[in-house]
Length: 311
Image (cartoon, rainbow, N blue to C red; front, side, top):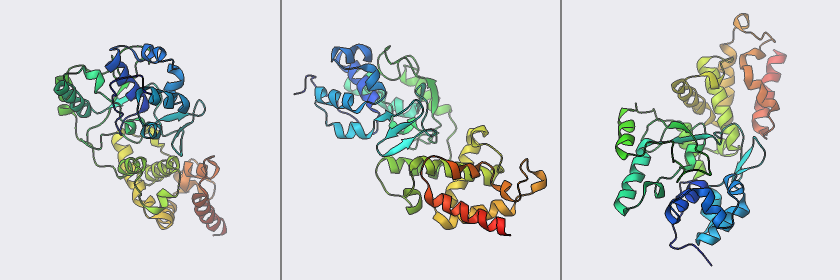
């Protein structure tokens, strides 16, 4: 039987840690570490998404664990995490990063005010904000703001000490922010995490691979094969992602077309890598040796590289 009353329901778009932090603010008006230890739970185990600890918290709170577990990012190793069936390495923000949309938090604060609650009870961290390719709010089209995440043992709520407390300040941040362009990759990621189907070829790959291929292809096509995606500005990253997605969405035919474009535009005299014509692909060649499974991509690259060697 649940030992916490009343239930503060889990919201379908938030992280498991966000919900636990909001419960701490709701039930004891204090830090999450104290709240969890009082319940006999391990704060560290919960912070890294230990499923057994998440289920125990749900049982204590009287919450169906299914929706919470679906939004729980579970640590496998120091560099790898799991979200449902998805393995995430490079596409997940570090644990120290806290990102938020000021307009979303202002709406949370308005709900808190209407209910007569402390804002920490309603401010929630959206799961989608945890992924690096999500650089803007899909609802408000505003760039996400980054802050250092507060120590999980200190403060009330996920956003304690890191985010302006006044709703007016959040609204001012939202009002001064330049709108972000629509990103088809962001929309795809959000839909996929929500369980909605997308184009067949991206859906056949692990999400991490979809993101990597889209970003690699787009940056190579837009800015050259030896420009690192991580070195681009936020705006250029959006441009590269949109470009890459335009080919990924068409499956094998789109990938082959992108490779042909890179090949046609390659000038070995201007390239730091003069290994025949293979230098046209730069870091994309590394995808052939990437540990995550991507058999169809490897086959497409292999067939294209074989045709180059024969020409």
